[in-house]
Length: 153
Ligand SMILES: [Zn+2]
Image 1: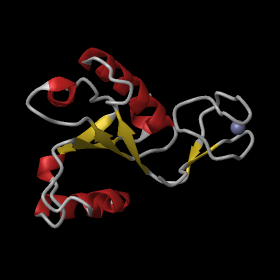
Image 2: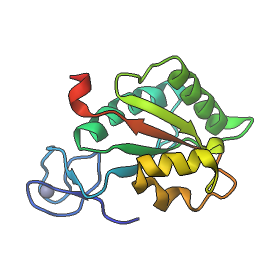
Image 3: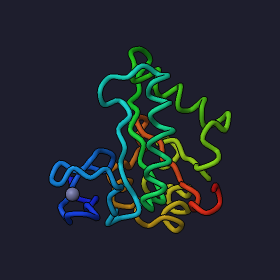
Protein backbone atom coordinates (compact mmCIF):
# COMPACT_ATOMS: atom_id res chain seq x y z
CA UNK A 1 0.00 0.00 0.00
CA UNK A 2 1.21 3.52 -0.76
CA UNK A 3 2.48 5.63 2.10
CA UNK A 4 -0.24 8.15 2.72
CA UNK A 5 0.46 9.48 6.22
CA UNK A 6 3.45 11.71 6.94
CA UNK A 7 4.73 12.64 10.39
CA UNK A 8 4.43 16.40 11.07
CA UNK A 9 7.36 16.23 13.51
CA UNK A 10 10.03 14.21 11.66
CA UNK A 11 8.59 13.99 8.13
CA UNK A 12 8.80 10.22 7.86
CA UNK A 13 6.00 8.06 6.48
CA UNK A 14 4.13 6.34 9.28
CA UNK A 15 0.89 4.56 10.15
CA UNK A 16 -2.27 6.64 10.26
CA UNK A 17 -3.51 5.84 13.73
CA UNK A 18 -0.50 5.06 15.89
CA UNK A 19 2.31 7.07 17.45
CA UNK A 20 5.24 7.72 15.08
CA UNK A 21 7.69 4.76 15.12
CA UNK A 22 10.52 7.12 14.08
CA UNK A 23 10.28 9.99 16.56
CA UNK A 24 7.63 8.77 18.97
CA UNK A 25 5.26 11.73 18.67
CA UNK A 26 1.55 11.04 19.03
CA UNK A 27 0.68 14.19 17.05
CA UNK A 28 -1.63 13.21 14.21
CA UNK A 29 0.07 12.71 10.84
CA UNK A 30 -0.73 14.65 7.66
CA UNK A 31 -2.57 12.66 5.02
CA UNK A 32 -1.37 12.95 1.44
CA UNK A 33 -4.74 11.77 0.08
CA UNK A 34 -8.37 12.39 1.05
CA UNK A 35 -9.48 8.76 0.78
CA UNK A 36 -8.21 6.09 3.15
CA UNK A 37 -8.79 2.40 3.71
CA UNK A 38 -9.62 1.16 7.19
CA UNK A 39 -9.80 -2.53 8.13
CA UNK A 40 -11.89 -2.95 11.28
CA UNK A 41 -11.43 -6.73 11.31
CA UNK A 42 -7.74 -6.33 12.14
CA UNK A 43 -6.94 -7.82 15.54
CA UNK A 44 -10.13 -9.92 15.52
CA UNK A 45 -12.25 -7.56 17.67
CA UNK A 46 -15.74 -8.41 18.87
CA UNK A 47 -18.54 -6.54 17.14
CA UNK A 48 -18.88 -4.03 19.97
CA UNK A 49 -15.11 -3.46 20.13
CA UNK A 50 -15.03 -2.95 16.37
CA UNK A 51 -17.85 -0.40 16.52
CA UNK A 52 -16.21 1.50 19.39
CA UNK A 53 -12.85 1.56 17.60
CA UNK A 54 -14.59 2.72 14.46
CA UNK A 55 -16.07 5.73 16.26
CA UNK A 56 -12.61 6.73 17.51
CA UNK A 57 -10.93 6.13 14.17
CA UNK A 58 -13.54 8.04 12.19
CA UNK A 59 -12.93 11.03 14.46
CA UNK A 60 -9.14 10.83 14.04
CA UNK A 61 -9.32 10.37 10.27
CA UNK A 62 -11.69 13.30 9.97
CA UNK A 63 -9.34 15.47 12.04
CA UNK A 64 -6.52 14.47 9.69
CA UNK A 65 -8.57 15.69 6.74
CA UNK A 66 -9.92 12.43 5.29
CA UNK A 67 -13.11 12.92 3.28
CA UNK A 68 -13.94 9.31 2.49
CA UNK A 69 -13.18 5.97 4.12
CA UNK A 70 -13.19 2.53 2.52
CA UNK A 71 -14.28 0.47 5.48
CA UNK A 72 -13.26 -3.19 5.27
CA UNK A 73 -15.48 -5.32 7.49
CA UNK A 74 -15.64 -8.65 5.68
CA UNK A 75 -18.79 -10.61 5.08
CA UNK A 76 -20.29 -14.04 5.37
CA UNK A 77 -23.30 -15.69 6.93
CA UNK A 78 -21.30 -16.88 9.92
CA UNK A 79 -18.18 -15.84 11.81
CA UNK A 80 -17.04 -12.43 13.03
CA UNK A 81 -16.81 -10.97 9.52
CA UNK A 82 -20.53 -11.36 8.96
CA UNK A 83 -21.35 -10.16 12.47
CA UNK A 84 -19.20 -7.05 12.15
CA UNK A 85 -20.73 -6.25 8.79
CA UNK A 86 -24.23 -6.51 10.24
CA UNK A 87 -23.16 -4.43 13.25
CA UNK A 88 -21.73 -1.71 11.00
CA UNK A 89 -24.88 -1.60 8.88
CA UNK A 90 -27.11 -1.38 11.95
CA UNK A 91 -24.93 1.32 13.52
CA UNK A 92 -25.04 3.41 10.34
CA UNK A 93 -28.78 2.95 9.91
CA UNK A 94 -29.42 4.00 13.51
CA UNK A 95 -27.21 7.11 12.99
CA UNK A 96 -24.57 6.05 15.51
CA UNK A 97 -21.89 7.88 13.48
CA UNK A 98 -24.14 10.55 12.00
CA UNK A 99 -22.22 13.43 13.63
CA UNK A 100 -19.22 12.60 11.41
CA UNK A 101 -20.53 10.46 8.56
CA UNK A 102 -22.60 12.40 6.02
CA UNK A 103 -23.42 9.47 3.81
CA UNK A 104 -22.56 5.82 3.28
CA UNK A 105 -22.75 3.23 0.53
CA UNK A 106 -22.64 -0.51 1.05
CA UNK A 107 -20.16 -2.22 -1.27
CA UNK A 108 -22.95 -4.09 -3.04
CA UNK A 109 -24.50 -0.74 -4.07
CA UNK A 110 -21.47 0.70 -5.81
CA UNK A 111 -20.42 -1.84 -8.43
CA UNK A 112 -17.94 -0.05 -10.68
CA UNK A 113 -19.73 1.47 -13.67
CA UNK A 114 -23.16 1.51 -11.98
CA UNK A 115 -25.10 4.81 -11.86
CA UNK A 116 -24.71 4.99 -8.07
CA UNK A 117 -20.97 4.48 -8.36
CA UNK A 118 -20.67 7.13 -11.08
CA UNK A 119 -22.53 9.66 -8.95
CA UNK A 120 -20.33 8.85 -5.99
CA UNK A 121 -17.12 9.22 -8.01
CA UNK A 122 -18.17 12.67 -9.20
CA UNK A 123 -18.47 13.64 -5.55
CA UNK A 124 -15.29 11.90 -4.36
CA UNK A 125 -12.88 11.13 -7.23
CA UNK A 126 -10.36 9.74 -4.75
CA UNK A 127 -12.52 6.63 -4.41
CA UNK A 128 -11.90 5.57 -7.99
CA UNK A 129 -8.59 3.86 -7.21
CA UNK A 130 -10.44 1.56 -4.80
CA UNK A 131 -13.79 1.04 -6.49
CA UNK A 132 -12.49 0.30 -9.98
CA UNK A 133 -11.44 -3.16 -8.78
CA UNK A 134 -15.03 -4.16 -7.95
CA UNK A 135 -17.05 -4.51 -11.11
CA UNK A 136 -19.72 -6.53 -9.32
CA UNK A 137 -19.48 -4.68 -6.02
CA UNK A 138 -17.74 -5.87 -2.87
CA UNK A 139 -19.93 -7.13 -0.05
CA UNK A 140 -17.00 -6.94 2.36
CA UNK A 141 -16.74 -3.15 2.40
CA UNK A 142 -18.73 0.00 3.03
CA UNK A 143 -17.86 3.49 1.78
CA UNK A 144 -18.20 6.26 4.36
CA UNK A 145 -18.45 9.89 3.23
CA UNK A 146 -17.18 12.11 6.04
CA UNK A 147 -18.53 15.55 6.76
CA UNK A 148 -16.32 18.59 7.13
CA UNK A 149 -14.76 18.87 10.55
CA UNK A 150 -16.10 22.33 11.32
CA UNK A 151 -19.71 21.16 11.09
CA UNK A 152 -19.47 18.79 14.04
CA UNK A 153 -17.41 20.86 16.49
ZN1 LIG B 1 7.82 11.20 13.48
